[in-house]
Amino acid sequence: MEFPLRQGMLLAHTAVMTSARFVQIYREDGAALRQELARGLMGEPASVSPKFLYDALGSRLFDAITELPEYYPTRTERTILDAHGGDIAALVGRGRTLIDLGAGNCEKAARLFDVLAPLRYVAVDISVDYLRQALGCLQSQHPGIEMVGVGADFSVSLTLPPEAGRGERLLLYPGSSIGNFTPDDALRFLRQARSVGGAGGALLIGVDLVKPKPVLEPAYDDALKVTAAFNLNLLRRLNALLGCDARIEDFDHVALYNEGESRIEMHLQARRALTLRWPDGARALAAGERIHTENSYKYTLDGFDRLLRQAGFARTTRWTDERDWFAVFLAA
Ligand code: AVI
Image 1: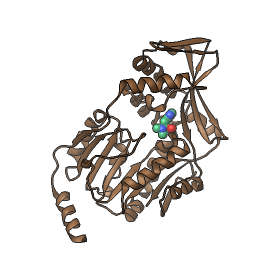
Image 2: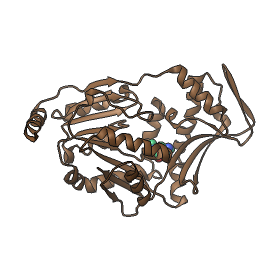
Image 3: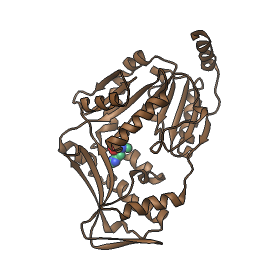
Image 4: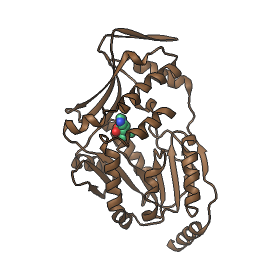
């Protein structure tokens, strides 16, 4: 059974791929998005899902955040992956299908190409348009890797189109994006990841760890105010998608560490009493009242290990940086 598969893998490996393929399976439903936004604004407390943070400008602002001195996660994860890429490859083997969840500019996965030598690279993001440039460029640098861009919203459900191919899968979910789910949703997501990985599948996932407030809070409230702009940009999205009349100058960015919940919370706080209005609704906010816009959960090493096991992963290995600020888990 093993030989034909290996032969097929070898053929795929020596083939020269000239262009990446793209499949868009997520379709934006404007009415559903408006409904979701209105429901959040009318809630107690008012809230907006963090998924609305990532329009074209929001995605650029997030990229800028990852370069800030205060925002340690990206840099620390990179250090761990650079130091332990060989150990990871020794455990998962080379020549897998690498499935990059939330690929963005594909930079993190590309750094692993040399050690993991994937046969196929499947970059998943909400819109294939974000992926076209990065993947086009990567394909020309790595003609031996078959590349597929998939536009999918896996925060709702993690399903992949047939173009993602068969073969042993390694799912990559870096950046501690798992922290933006509630622990219940994180567990649901991990269970889906296990089932999408299939028999012999593995998950490589980055997780931000609990640490003192004076390190955590500035990471989400930097001196340059890039994170403030990232959060306030949500108001522009509210106006564009819902036809709302929010004014950026009426709100402050607030980021605080909720120790009891083990999470950073981002809020937009009204500077004065005001009413947000849109075509079929309105929400009054008192001065100082907040719209909750994001949670970023921080885990302990043992806590996240337990979550992986609860999700059905029987074997886990983890690596951390020297300060234990961030962890990369390999779960199979
Ligand atoms: C994408 N995600 C892991 C980031 C985080 O750290 O929770 C989003 C972010 N929000 C503010 N800064 C970064």
